[in-house]
Length: 475
Image (tube, rainbow, N blue to C red; front, side, top):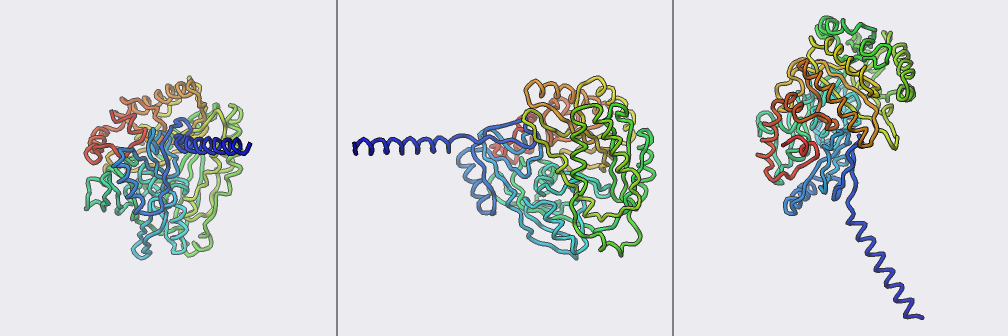
């Protein structure tokens, strides 16, 4: 009996150890916020030091593994992972390394968020020049997509970067700026993590300022002239955003604008300088929920938004607080559906005719479009994968769609039609989102993409740094 018990215990121990071994060998399933590309990867490393990052890169070289770099994973087209690859999570690599208020510069590790920077610089009445409309993203991730935001004076993020250090596919560390290893500068910024790991970044800051918020309704046909004459030519207006109606009754016709105008009495800045969260997140989330399920909800949401936001004249906000939009209102958890972003860029003088043509597509297709915001981006001739070949309006679209193969195919056809319309108006589209665009559309929107991929192979001939975006479009 005793021998049988020992035998059973031994066999149980062997079975348990085998199960644990098999579990540890089981590939992890990784997906970004879009949830449309679940992919089996080998493992995830959470970075905390430069030494371990360098060690992981050299080990991957020896083991012939592939590496992808991840921040908050809001890029939705597989930019942060690759099948059976190693994912390096940078979120804990987030120290502030150097801060010089007098020179208005700051150096941070690439996993630091914009919120981390704001908390550091706000007491000195300094602010960030360019970032997305939410401050939750990592600096390295934002640089990798060459982000832009509400500011209309500084251009895209590449304009605010002084230098960065890059961990290369050889495992070496290079200083990169416009004067040192300069060929890498416009490749890495907007390069989607394909040239190495951005270790730390030195950014130029600007003064925090006090703005008065001014909102008004406007006819979409009048918007281009309004922007050029009353916004861009008015140096007192520092930031700007507009919103287009997606409600069936006013589709792409209803519009309101919000300007952030510098006020004369900057001595009152301290009264408003405390960093705040977006207190409108809860009602915004509720109203967005109404619009997901019916045309009635979309019409009601537009009516409520217009009443809430139009006529805000007299409200004051600092630059730092204007750049602290809370993304919680966009959080969405549904087992069969997800919400994706698309962003299209069109020249200012094409805006009206573009909307007229885009409206025709949307009226004839079934697309659950929830929101469109409009921003302005300056011409960018520096980044190799520049999305702004001239001064342009950026239309950011939020779309609710299913996760099934049929739903993905259905959305793909509609988005490709929308991109065709965009290209017909000399526009382009943003690359961080799901890979619905065709290769031909990529070639037309980004004529330097072949140069980009050639340089990728020059600097990373063994393709150590890989992701699904590269796999899709580098052919």
